[in-house]
Length: 551
Image (cartoon, rainbow, N blue to C red; front, side, top):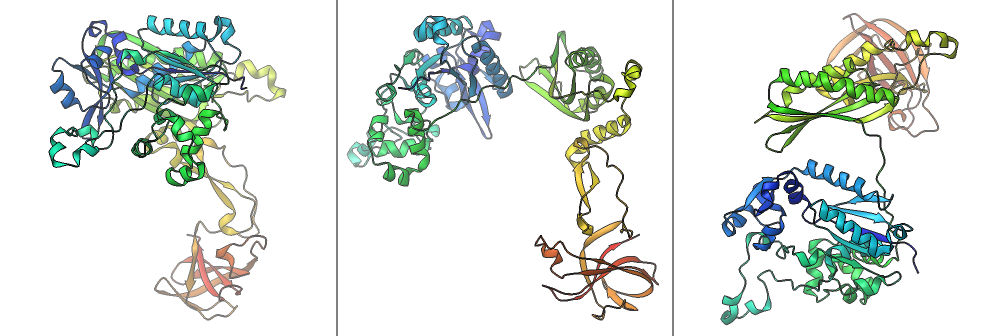
């Protein structure tokens, strides 16, 4: 018998009820959240009154407006919904420390060893539902030994399998009965009609320990978290319940529907372990300002930055952290959010290094009807370590506020990176190789320190390097007096060399299959200063090649 117990919390009306909490006057209205899917707008979340009017999630907005003219809608803010769900995860932390956020507005809690603190599992679920009701949220819960079973009980507990009717039922085959066929509406062309959420579904279902199969065998196959196409195929074959599916030959099921179907069934039954990844408790560094009147001028936004940045930097300084990435969020009066992001080449808690990067991107924010809340959050931070040597500890207080030696260069990299991206700014570092094209490595400037002193080489290297290009010259080891390269005929004025370089015998480099090379620094009569080499020939024919230029 498994000792693990999992609780699934599903908020089916999260998007709509999040807005209803903020606007109390909408509670008595038929309300829905609309999501823009390219060329069509569909209902993303419904209030309870909207469900009672017969509206359905996934229904096109035009059809819903025709069915219910008094319908009020708001555009979906996916980012705000994710933040709201993270807030609910912090609220659920009072019941279990092991919480993960699942797709489609749900939380997964590992309540093993926690239920007795609330009077058992039934008492815990009752308190959770009471808290959710006080928050104005609809909630459906499921408790089982596995995350898959708890997920299915929370969404499909108490439901039987539904017929897969899309307008292609058997009673449409005969002409006499074709008039009784259900007309396929727009959202039904790809599968079954979306199911309405009623109050009877929003209840709690608890599977006793060790009785997972008995609790989920009567649930529809959709409770296994399958794709819609797989669910439709199973329903057409008459496999509508989990119990019907579990009795089929596994090899035949996996061959026809894929191995993923069998894995989901095993996860729900506990044959395959399914871990819960808890939320990472990152330190939060964010400040906000609520404005009495909406603003829209850039000068007002700069004044707001000057009020918020010192508070944010003080918070970072108290925790010994330096800001690496920052996000400025502007909440508009029409309940939309716009944001800009900036990154620093080095972590810092100095507002004078952060402020210019945000001001530079303020033009990207369209104030629209006005901004009433401004928020700044450090989305990525790093620890700031002391750079003063132990021998200079007496001078630590004096040098504490002094900028690092590379502060000017780091600020320049940050400013340029704000325009073209920090990943596009690179610097060269020496590499441990004697091969010319491998003597350096290209690193991102924002995530690397300046290169130390480069090692001294026996011979100078050209400024420009390119893949070896063939040179039309006699295939002799002595430097030719005249050769053709890139369609030009060049005469040798001076040749310094040779410098013999052998390939790395322990690596199979296709570019060095020509064997040992003798490099020459060639000064031409025409003024070209080239780097030529003679390949003695190994896996490839021997001959002369040009690989770089000193000018």
